[in-house]
Image 1 (tube, helix red, strand yellow):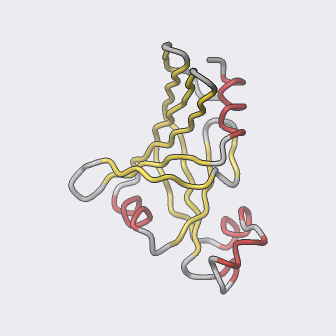
Image 2 (cartoon, rainbow, N blue to C red):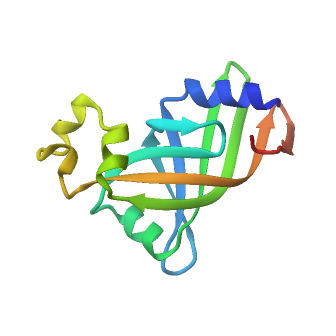
Length: 139
């Protein structure tokens, strides 16, 4: 798949799957709402709870991957990005991706201590589409 096709695939998804590593070295996968912001195929920002298990795991071990996929009729396409996840709690990062409806989950607003940002930075990438697969350069 071409990078432009991959960007379109990611842009259409409402769900992203993120993976962390637990204290025993096993991968843990979780479905999340799509990233709030992204910079090409290299950087992705997600909104989450500071108190979540995933945040604790990323603080302990920042190795991560994210996965996006779509199914159309009998075909399937997906992309996996591998890299690191940072937990950001600074005001600028939180304000950058804050949305009006977030107050429902974070009653104290953008400064709620249970609100933080996950920033994923990709180091490598692979794709799968209709029985074909490959790696690609990140742009």
